[in-house]
Image (cartoon, rainbow, N blue to C red):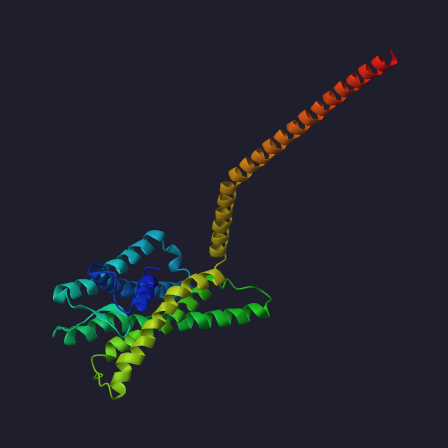
Length: 295
């Protein structure tokens, strides 16, 4: 939501209308989150591969070690935005090709630093993800075949989730990674292939990143039973809360309706009682008239 909503607003407005502060914040957060997300996928696929390959050695792994690794990932992901801020913190512009704020990398030092930094932060992680995901997928296929022979089952849930998550991530981020590497070597010629690379290819690569943002929810829903149970519990709790909020109104309406019916019944009783009294008075009057006429 934090990434898609500004994008939608910018596309509708045709320019950046959210202010300079959010423009700068968006740029630095993006260059922090992008390597962090990729590094966490590397940790995910590598740990799953090692667990399946060396089950006895990895049995002693504890949650504390996983937390330490994740902390190192988040800390190392801040290197790139710190470098950008140190070189030229004001080198931020609005790119009309993708309708978003971007870092310009216009300083001369980036010609040497950018290929090295993006190779470390993007190219190498993608290669590691592919190198660990392919054996994991092969393990699933072989285990499935072996299980069919003995009429058994395979605990495929965690491994399949890792494989699908890594595949979607690589397919959605690899084009943008190639663009950031190739932008240093492909000349921006509007009349040639360079122009298509810096416009059409950039747009396609950028919007493919949205696939990864939207896909994780559906991947976890389809492959993780506990996640589906969690969603079902939350939905049922929301339904219960909404029903509880509507219940007092319903009771109040019933009370109001009941009191109205009671008033109507009392009025009918009063009317019927009055009618009876009137009939009795009329009978008495008629009786008196008859007595007088007899006399």
